[in-house]
Length: 94
Image 1 (tube, rainbow, N blue to C red):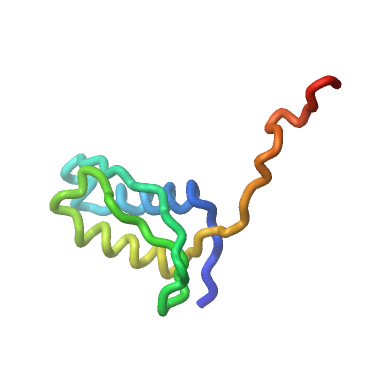
Image 2: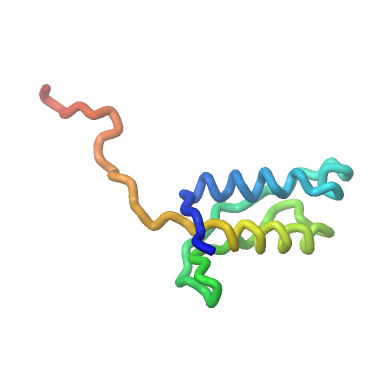
């Protein structure tokens, strides 16, 4: 299966969305802090990112692992870098 590509913020949001739909997490009213994904060399499955150090995650490690496994199977982290020029598009002295 070909993975879709998302940027770091989009991956973080997708993992957050899926985690906070897990019945046990919703039932307990827990808000788990989802870290930014970090790029890595593609693993055996071809996934090029991972996440570590979720906040407020005690007792939900298995749920987090299941969500991560599913999202890592569907998405890769975009490796394109944004242009870091002037965000306002104007130039000094114009």
